[in-house]
Length: 281
Image 1 (cartoon, rainbow, N blue to C red):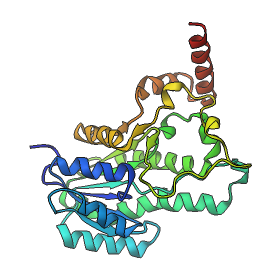
Image 2 (image 1 turned 60 degrees about the vertical axis):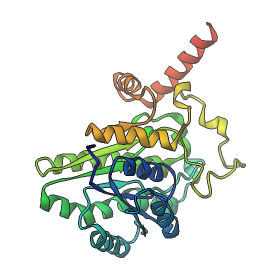
Image 3 (image 1 turned 90 degrees about the vertical axis):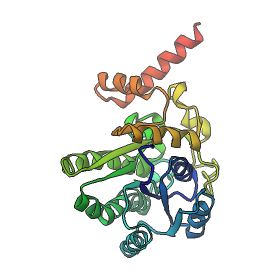
Image 4 (image 1 turned 180 degrees about the horizontal axis):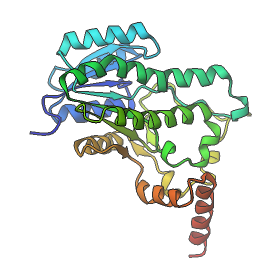
């Protein structure tokens, strides 16, 4: 029997990408999956594609209090209780010069990536606390742990991802002794090509793909599949890890970053030193 067998797990933003891959992995391990997504038809299709016929899909806009309340009622009606909430819904990054980013773009990122998570937690946490068990996962980013230079193009996104990490610290302390635990998932660069839209093309005010590699250690530019990232998440949850990161070798890099007093420019210096060493081999 696996850790996930017979557990009911709600995943937001799981019609595509890492969320959908995670739903598939957890189903294979015996969990019952509830999928919520702004794309209601996509959520239902993703649920129907899972084996066993027990998954359900729901439309939910996490920016809307009433929709989250309706989701809570619908999920509890369908399954009785939720053992694990995986907050995975995300507003994709707006990329471009920070000075050109509008306040509406900042508000939109925070509304989905921070307040959307808070709404979901406020809806489902009381039931967990009442029965003395449960687990909440907040999806942040590897860039919140290791602030590589590309964040200069994505101020609202990285601010929201940093907030997810910090608020998870707060919840971990607040929920100590309640039986409810917290994890933070920090994916690295991941291929989510099944997600509609995709990044905007480079233009006069848009960074090029090469701009995102400048000053970044080569090992942190490797893209992994959504299925690989989901596998790392599931393995970390089975161990009850607090921080789970799908970026290969992140822990030594994180230690080196801490030793440099968390100075973001130390990452650039490190990348330059590594590039110079590689060129001299």
